[in-house]
Length: 305
Image (tube, rainbow, N blue to C red; front, side):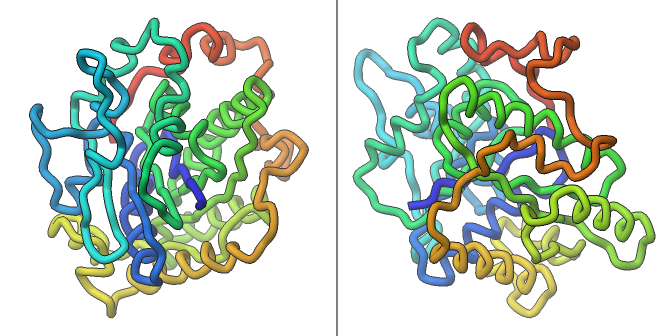
């Protein structure tokens, strides 16, 4: 089983779109997939026509024990289609950092929930929130891989640096190894800036980037508005071809032994020193805010898309 976190603290980079459509594409190829929505906004569920309210069991209930009785991951999971399941979230998840502020082992709640599941999946895809707090940390701890979507915006490449520093910190603080790969999203061949940023991404992450590029495609937005994956919305469009190509790349890696992060720090994936992030131990203001051992929920305040 491969557990993949789809993460980027920058909003609007196609993270949830990728989580939904990669999951659906893998399921269409005969893989049993569970999509876990770790974003309190619940966009992954909304994008698949899943509605929740305060009485609906969600991933929030999995994180919290009520009167000594725990709710399992299997109990909140819903089937979307053949081979495709989702564990939805809702706004209640936004308070989980405060609820678990003093709880022992709070950073491993998701990992433990997955390990206790009675279901067997080929893939678990985790849609992370656009922040670097406890929810994202839980997602990284539960995962063996992190896929990082990078859109063609000016700040996208530089915005990945802090996430990479956090991934490095997870490994150094806990010994948990995570393999990182990058996905270029929202590419528009008609614009010069898209070509320039795509070249920058390739130069910086050569060897750690998927060959598939997700093109900007209005059908992906229409599918989200219709609350469907692109697989169920339109199999003739470029968005379908792109995500199916990405899924096939992911599946091809199944035969690669030991898909793991390289021995050197993940921040060394940056090819140029100009774009490289400072090491996580660098004593600047941002680094001093991060203390996983004492207060992982204060790593960053939540932001919205």
